[in-house]
Length: 255
Ligand SMILES: [Zn+2]
Image (cartoon, rainbow, N blue to C red; front, side):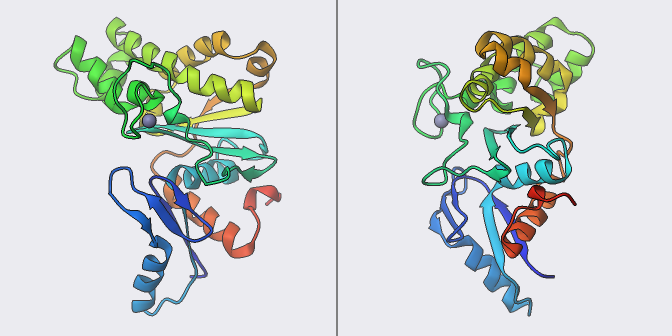
């Protein structure tokens, strides 16, 4: 064991190894990397520990070994309990000036919408993530409890299920469309639990994107499914450990 890489939800300072605040688990400026390092040291494993935001960690898996392999300008967007992203520009992950860069889930898409965990109203993730899909599902079919039920019904061409996924894709298109217009990426990878709906989500998303994005940006960008779902965190943790342990990103070199 040479190094350990850990993905952590919420904003993370990867340089100091600190969880800035936990959106669900309520920590504030928690020295998470040091805590993991101490835990490993207690088991006689003296290795460096690197942490980063869980979505950026999963993005590493996709850009190293998955759908984004060989791409140097793209975004990985995860749609699950929330909506987040990892942005790669010029072959490097983009962080911004206080490590918040890529929080696409908190773009306002409905100023009158539901209150979000961030304190704002009508953020993208309050309208397009798995809980929003479950809410829309229960409103039309009480027997549908979560996004999986909607996906299963969509596969059977149920019009209500198709309409719900179309609605989620419509809201997502505001976030993805902003990426297209601002960053002009060559690739957008959609991952997370909701992406299991596959083309039932991506088809409508591409259609709505045509309305959102400037034509040259839309025409250039491929919107594809992530390769990894359950293993993205583990693989991305390895990529993070390689990158930080060695001082360069593994995807910047042909391997
Ligand atoms: Zn928000």
